[in-house]
Image: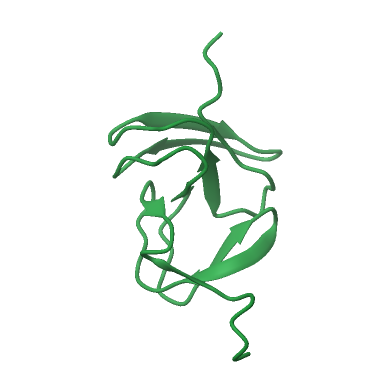
Length: 96
């Protein structure tokens, strides 16, 4: 059996988390309660980092654990590494 390479925690999530380092071009198969997804990674994704499950527009929430954890600062394409270079955190900023 091939070890799982990424995980979706909640069916509402629009990102998945890499469970090991994943190379650009890797095809990742993911399943949630109600869907099955196949994503080809646009960049390498380090272990513990996120990648987009769908195209995400600027300002759109980034959802992990079924909760909003940030918002896109630019368009993020399906399969793109999703991290501090394209996501703005919304917690602990003190200005909201």
